[in-house]
Length: 447
Image (cartoon, rainbow, N blue to C red; front, side, top):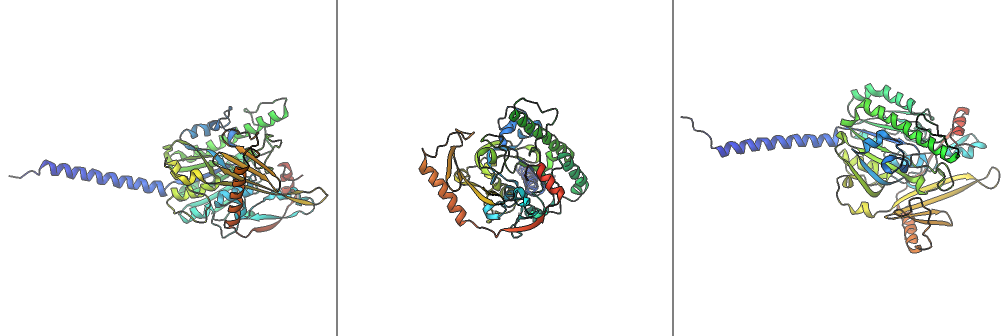
């Protein structure tokens, strides 16, 4: 007679088997989450966050991104490190502030220098700084990038770590997408990839995109309507690639901007003029593989936090050379005192026309953002202090009423700027040809 095993032993063996399979399966999923997804970073040039519907704008300027935002992590208070493309994008690529990586001006320098000499000096990311493409390359990713802005290219050091990189001079979103679609076969055939896309819309000049544009008798309203229609236009092109590559299941998609746009809030149209909120507050949205994480986060964060967050998500340790921090604790709804109490900075250095013919002058702007405060300094004499919570349009200067607070915030900027690690500024000479000059004139970079 065959003896039966006690029922308890059989049950425990079954339970043990289930648990073993469960943890093995979840371990694989965890490893997949850390290592096996694509990373796509999209920068939408000159896009201020408050012109997007999921940041409270009354117009639905981005129906696709709005729907995607409902399945994403949306950071509500995100600040750029500058109000110009080259220094801000260099900060995205390096997790450093402009006065650290040394990229202070891009081809915007030709605003003045070109008028007397077509050979200009262009700032370049130092080779010793590890860029986001190099980080992902080291982790086994294919690295591809395309920029529709001439400021972002090989000349300025942005191609470090990329297997392929293409730079246009505002050829517009359809041309950008055409290149990405040409890359599709090799991107999908060779494992996980990092793809960087820099769209130029809604950068000036604003095109009246049908059917979204509405003409107004008021010139400012018409221009803003055109700006908004450009957002709709680029939104459609992001949707096209999202569906073509099926990013919903296998891709970490990060969408942000390099800087905002003035739109005459403080009397000026474009950007690179000030460090008011409209020029430095940008969107940041992260869509995770499968769209399983949805959260809105109000903590102040910066574009320098993108690399540390990506490093954390793909299983790389923190880089002590990065000034940004990982946003994963916020994403996972964990308390993190550093994120809630740190200072954020923004910096703008401009060389522009002086009072006399063929003379140049330097203009320097500095900003400290801390909790509810935004200190703006235009060197050497102008200081403004605004409440981030109560004065989003920055109309009421609180400097006189809160001098001690302003002094503390200014000291924090100066101390950080003095003590932080800085790299030797690199520049390359570039002679503008007629085609480049004409294109830069059309974009308002050359007068």
